[in-house]
Length: 412
Image (cartoon, rainbow, N blue to C red; front, side):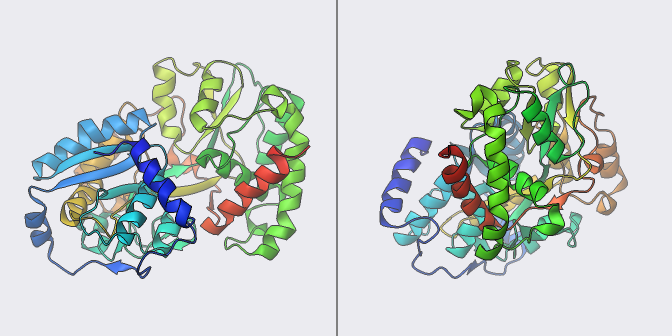
């Protein structure tokens, strides 16, 4: 088992030769899975060990994998080993290094991934493709669901299996904010009117990046005004107003904008400690447990915005260098089962929104979802996702992050 530090050193060696976006594996063409029956996949999977590389900073997610998903995999004859990492890019760099070395039995068998990490990996031939249609439980998802067919504008093409849905959500302390804003521009106005009580993570933190994309959409006049696909012309046209607005906001931020939380976890700690009155998350369902266990104040509420926020899905992808692809498929199929999706949706377990289409489930399985506890903190997913807009294509992410760094972080 490799530690995140060990992975980082491999990534550093690889990056010294080429950047992640430009690095070409020996053959960047997608590696297609060999057609085989599900019974044969199950037979081949027995006795295999599957290493799932995933972000190690999500305590609930780690516990779910260790205590719920791994035992279910063991019953199917597969040993599931969770490998904690600091950043998904670490896993991609490891796979790229393995491809360059010609390995076919690498250290990475499954990756929790989405967004630009998936798109960059797909472009470099990192992922095994064409395998998800063989998963029996994929029949329980809606093939017309755009969140499951594209990932930040990149077609999924059977290169990753859906795991759960997310909705970017702003969170506030109702004891401190009696009259909360109702749209995203209102959030920026509120922050300027209440100096020191708001901040956001510094991109490239995942949550900080989506915050500036939301700000771009709001400042530009709405989601319909920002093309989903990136072009330099659109960036040059839209980004200046974004950076002007964020620079105007900067003096009113926590510590006068002289520093930013480096991660979403740091922002959450500021909120939990009462230093700021808002935080933000892609996983609002986890708020129920954070309030129940006293981490967050009891007056924590979700800010529902009339202009909506971005929604997306997280996935499990199999690297093209894995030597345990059958076991990885069995784990991905288990993760899509109604039993696992129900357990994962419980606030006390992980509190993640299901990717299953409830209309495709049996009556008992549907009843299991309907029996999930109603949260006193978090509205139903349908409420959170009202007026939701899709993620901008992954190609927007790096230019906006770099533009923020040059124009806002390093600006006057």
